[in-house]
Amino acid sequence: MTMDVRRLITIRRDLWGHRFRLTVEPASVLHPSRSFHEIADAQTAAAELSDATGWPWTDLSGEGDDA
Image 1 (spheres, rainbow, N blue to C red):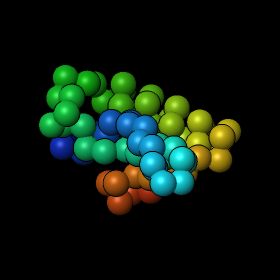
Image 2: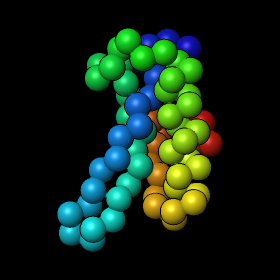
Image 3: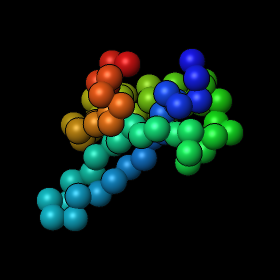
Image 4: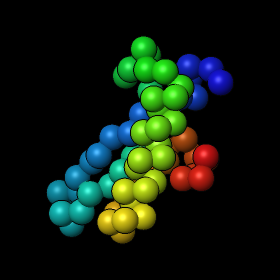
């Protein structure tokens, strides 16, 4: 897997609805030193947290949260 398809979990707050959204974004520019396993672990944790809390989880890669 190449650097440009790595993902980074970020948590964003929707200021109007006071809801939180877990987002997976390209990580190569933000954190190029992160390993693939760190990113994959973060994706898994985000999906589990989303399931437990009901917060939406958005994957901006277009691959969906099952990627």
